[in-house]
Length: 172
Image 1: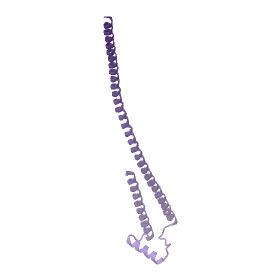
Image 2 (image 1 turned 90 degrees about the vertical axis):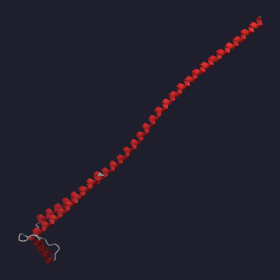
Image 3 (image 1 turned 120 degrees about the vertical axis):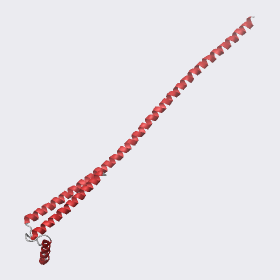
Image 4 (image 1 turned 180 degrees about the vertical axis):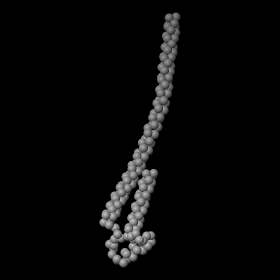
Protein backbone atom coordinates (compact mmCIF):
# COMPACT_ATOMS: atom_id res chain seq x y z
CA UNK A 1 0.00 0.00 0.00
CA UNK A 2 2.86 2.36 0.80
CA UNK A 3 4.50 1.61 -2.56
CA UNK A 4 1.27 2.23 -4.43
CA UNK A 5 0.72 5.49 -2.56
CA UNK A 6 4.25 6.64 -3.33
CA UNK A 7 3.87 5.74 -7.00
CA UNK A 8 0.60 7.65 -7.19
CA UNK A 9 2.18 10.66 -5.48
CA UNK A 10 5.10 10.54 -7.95
CA UNK A 11 2.70 10.45 -10.88
CA UNK A 12 0.69 13.40 -9.45
CA UNK A 13 3.87 15.41 -8.97
CA UNK A 14 4.97 14.65 -12.53
CA UNK A 15 1.62 15.78 -13.92
CA UNK A 16 1.78 18.99 -11.86
CA UNK A 17 5.33 19.63 -13.05
CA UNK A 18 4.34 19.19 -16.69
CA UNK A 19 1.38 21.54 -16.22
CA UNK A 20 3.55 24.22 -14.66
CA UNK A 21 6.16 23.76 -17.37
CA UNK A 22 3.54 24.25 -20.10
CA UNK A 23 2.22 27.36 -18.35
CA UNK A 24 5.77 28.70 -18.13
CA UNK A 25 6.37 28.02 -21.82
CA UNK A 26 3.10 29.76 -22.67
CA UNK A 27 4.12 32.82 -20.63
CA UNK A 28 7.53 32.83 -22.31
CA UNK A 29 5.84 32.70 -25.71
CA UNK A 30 3.60 35.62 -24.76
CA UNK A 31 6.52 37.69 -23.49
CA UNK A 32 8.59 36.99 -26.60
CA UNK A 33 5.62 37.77 -28.82
CA UNK A 34 4.84 41.09 -27.09
CA UNK A 35 8.35 42.56 -27.50
CA UNK A 36 10.23 44.72 -25.02
CA UNK A 37 7.88 47.70 -25.08
CA UNK A 38 4.86 45.99 -23.58
CA UNK A 39 4.41 43.76 -20.57
CA UNK A 40 1.74 42.10 -18.44
CA UNK A 41 -1.87 42.22 -19.64
CA UNK A 42 -0.95 44.67 -22.43
CA UNK A 43 1.21 41.95 -23.98
CA UNK A 44 -1.72 39.54 -23.82
CA UNK A 45 -4.01 42.09 -25.51
CA UNK A 46 -1.41 42.74 -28.23
CA UNK A 47 -1.02 39.00 -28.76
CA UNK A 48 -4.80 38.53 -28.99
CA UNK A 49 -5.12 41.45 -31.44
CA UNK A 50 -2.36 40.09 -33.64
CA UNK A 51 -3.86 36.63 -33.61
CA UNK A 52 -7.39 37.83 -34.44
CA UNK A 53 -6.22 40.31 -37.11
CA UNK A 54 -4.07 37.76 -38.91
CA UNK A 55 -6.81 35.13 -38.88
CA UNK A 56 -4.04 32.64 -39.59
CA UNK A 57 -3.71 29.65 -37.28
CA UNK A 58 0.00 29.44 -38.05
CA UNK A 59 0.74 32.88 -36.60
CA UNK A 60 4.17 32.84 -34.93
CA UNK A 61 4.56 35.28 -32.00
CA UNK A 62 8.26 35.69 -32.67
CA UNK A 63 9.92 32.38 -31.89
CA UNK A 64 12.92 31.44 -33.89
CA UNK A 65 13.27 28.03 -35.44
CA UNK A 66 15.91 27.17 -32.83
CA UNK A 67 13.50 28.04 -30.03
CA UNK A 68 10.75 26.00 -31.66
CA UNK A 69 13.15 23.07 -31.99
CA UNK A 70 14.07 23.42 -28.35
CA UNK A 71 10.37 23.42 -27.38
CA UNK A 72 9.81 20.32 -29.53
CA UNK A 73 12.81 18.61 -27.93
CA UNK A 74 11.51 19.54 -24.49
CA UNK A 75 8.08 18.15 -25.39
CA UNK A 76 9.62 14.88 -26.59
CA UNK A 77 11.71 14.64 -23.41
CA UNK A 78 8.63 15.30 -21.33
CA UNK A 79 6.75 12.60 -23.20
CA UNK A 80 9.64 10.16 -22.77
CA UNK A 81 9.88 10.95 -19.05
CA UNK A 82 6.11 10.52 -18.73
CA UNK A 83 6.35 7.08 -20.36
CA UNK A 84 9.22 6.13 -18.03
CA UNK A 85 7.24 7.28 -14.98
CA UNK A 86 4.24 5.28 -16.17
CA UNK A 87 6.52 2.28 -16.59
CA UNK A 88 7.91 2.77 -13.08
CA UNK A 89 4.39 3.02 -11.67
CA UNK A 90 3.45 -0.21 -13.46
CA UNK A 91 6.58 -1.93 -12.15
CA UNK A 92 5.80 -0.77 -8.61
CA UNK A 93 2.26 -2.09 -8.94
CA UNK A 94 3.62 -5.41 -10.22
CA UNK A 95 6.06 -5.53 -7.29
CA UNK A 96 3.21 -4.82 -4.87
CA UNK A 97 1.24 -7.73 -6.38
CA UNK A 98 4.26 -10.02 -6.05
CA UNK A 99 4.61 -8.97 -2.40
CA UNK A 100 0.92 -9.75 -1.80
CA UNK A 101 1.34 -13.18 -3.41
CA UNK A 102 4.45 -13.81 -1.33
CA UNK A 103 2.55 -12.79 1.80
CA UNK A 104 -0.18 -15.33 0.99
CA UNK A 105 2.45 -18.04 0.48
CA UNK A 106 4.16 -17.20 3.77
CA UNK A 107 0.83 -17.34 5.60
CA UNK A 108 0.00 -20.70 3.99
CA UNK A 109 3.39 -22.12 4.91
CA UNK A 110 2.97 -20.81 8.46
CA UNK A 111 -0.33 -22.69 8.71
CA UNK A 112 1.32 -25.86 7.44
CA UNK A 113 4.15 -25.47 9.97
CA UNK A 114 1.58 -25.01 12.74
CA UNK A 115 -0.14 -28.25 11.67
CA UNK A 116 3.18 -30.10 11.63
CA UNK A 117 4.02 -28.76 15.10
CA UNK A 118 0.61 -29.81 16.42
CA UNK A 119 1.01 -33.29 14.91
CA UNK A 120 4.47 -33.66 16.48
CA UNK A 121 3.05 -32.73 19.90
CA UNK A 122 0.25 -35.26 19.44
CA UNK A 123 2.76 -37.97 18.49
CA UNK A 124 4.78 -37.26 21.64
CA UNK A 125 1.63 -37.51 23.80
CA UNK A 126 0.53 -40.75 22.13
CA UNK A 127 4.01 -42.29 22.50
CA UNK A 128 3.99 -41.50 26.23
CA UNK A 129 0.54 -43.08 26.57
CA UNK A 130 1.78 -46.14 24.64
CA UNK A 131 4.79 -46.51 26.93
CA UNK A 132 2.47 -46.42 29.96
CA UNK A 133 0.23 -49.06 28.42
CA UNK A 134 3.21 -51.31 27.63
CA UNK A 135 4.40 -51.04 31.24
CA UNK A 136 0.94 -51.96 32.52
CA UNK A 137 0.77 -54.93 30.17
CA UNK A 138 4.21 -56.07 31.29
CA UNK A 139 3.18 -55.91 34.96
CA UNK A 140 0.00 -57.85 34.22
CA UNK A 141 1.95 -60.43 32.29
CA UNK A 142 4.43 -60.86 35.14
CA UNK A 143 1.58 -61.16 37.63
CA UNK A 144 -0.20 -63.70 35.47
CA UNK A 145 3.00 -65.78 35.18
CA UNK A 146 3.41 -65.67 38.94
CA UNK A 147 -0.21 -66.60 39.48
CA UNK A 148 0.22 -69.45 36.98
CA UNK A 149 3.29 -70.69 38.78
CA UNK A 150 1.55 -70.47 42.18
CA UNK A 151 -1.47 -72.33 40.81
CA UNK A 152 0.78 -74.99 39.32
CA UNK A 153 2.67 -75.42 42.59
CA UNK A 154 -0.57 -75.49 44.55
CA UNK A 155 -1.94 -78.15 42.20
CA UNK A 156 1.27 -80.19 42.59
CA UNK A 157 1.07 -79.90 46.38
CA UNK A 158 -2.53 -81.10 46.30
CA UNK A 159 -1.66 -83.97 43.96
CA UNK A 160 1.33 -84.97 46.09
CA UNK A 161 -0.74 -84.74 49.27
CA UNK A 162 -3.35 -86.98 47.69
CA UNK A 163 -0.64 -89.43 46.57
CA UNK A 164 0.99 -89.48 50.00
CA UNK A 165 -2.38 -89.98 51.68
CA UNK A 166 -3.30 -92.77 49.30
CA UNK A 167 0.08 -94.38 49.81
CA UNK A 168 -0.40 -94.40 53.57
CA UNK A 169 -3.88 -95.78 53.23
CA UNK A 170 -2.72 -98.48 50.87
CA UNK A 171 0.33 -99.46 52.97
CA UNK A 172 -1.37 -99.34 56.26
